[in-house]
Length: 332
Ligand code: SAM
Ligand code: SF4
Image (cartoon, rainbow, N blue to C red; front, side, top):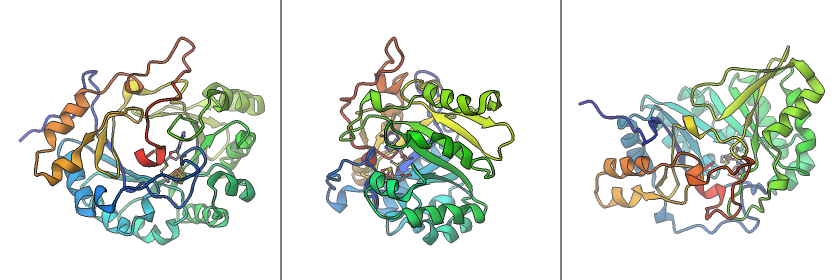
C-alpha cells in the first residue's frame, strides 16, 4: 500500500529524523550543557534499544530516508553499536554527530555499517582552551581521533559553535585547516537554550564570518551550491582542498526547506528544534497505541519559521527566554 509522505501545511516533505540516543554526555560544553549538568530522569523514562528501533521503523515506513544519531553524546550509550547496526539495516542513510571522544572504539562498527561520513564537533585546536570550553580534559584524544578518521578516509564535517571572546579569534585558523584537508568546517551561530547564558551580543553572525573570511581571502572566497535541504550555506577559498559553511539559524533561518523531525532520548517527537511542544511517542508505544496519527498530527502543527518565533525587523532576534530544554536534552 502506498504510504502518504509526511508533508506539513506549508508543503514541506519530512524525510529526515534526528534521534537523540541519550541526554548524557562525556563533555560539558559551555554553550550546550548548563554548568551544573542536567538532571537525568529514571532510566525507564528513556527509550530502550528495541523502542528506538520500533519508533525509527515507523518513521521509515512513513517515508523517512535519513536518520542522524545525536544526543547528548550518542556514543556513550552502552548499546550504541547494536542500535547503529540495527538502524543501518533499515535502508536509510545513517549519520552520526559526535564529539569524537569515543570514536576510536566505534570506527570498525561505522565501517561495517557503511557509515563513511561523520559530523564532529570541535570548537578549538588549542588544548588548554578546549579544556575550558568542554570542561573536561580530553583534548589530546579528540584531536587524535579526528586525525585518525581522516587517515581512514571518513568524510568529515567539523562543527564549531562560534562565540565572541571564546573562540572567534580562531575563525581563520579553522578555514586554514581546510587548505590541505578535504573537510568541511561548519560555523554554527550560537543559539539560546536553557541554562547556556545566551546573549545576542556574543553571537558571531553569518555576516561577521563572511566579512572576516573576505578580509583575509578577498575574492577567493566563493559561494558553493547548497543541497536542497541544507541548513548550511557553503563557501570555498579558491585552491583549498576543503570548504567551509555557515549555519545561521539565528540571523538567517533556513526553515523554508526544512525536512527535519526530532526524537528526544525520552521518546518525545519535536517538529522543530525551537519548538516547546512535544508528542510523547514512547508512552504511546508502551500503551500499544498507533504512532502514525500522532506523528502526522505533530507534522501538521509545524510552524513556518522557528516554531513561530518570527524574525524581527532586523532579522536577528530570537527571544533568549524560550521555554526550552537544554540543547543536550533535545539533541542538536
Ligand atoms: N555530542 C555530540 C556533539 O557535540 O557533536 C552531538 C550532540 S551536540 C548537542 C550537536 C551539535 O549541537 C554540536 O555540533 C554542538 O556544537 C551543537 N550545539 C550545542 N549547543 C549549541 C548552541 N547553544 N548553539 C549552537 N549549536 C549548539
Ligand atoms: Fe556534549 Fe555535544 Fe553538548 Fe558538547 S555539544 S556538551 S559534546 S552534547
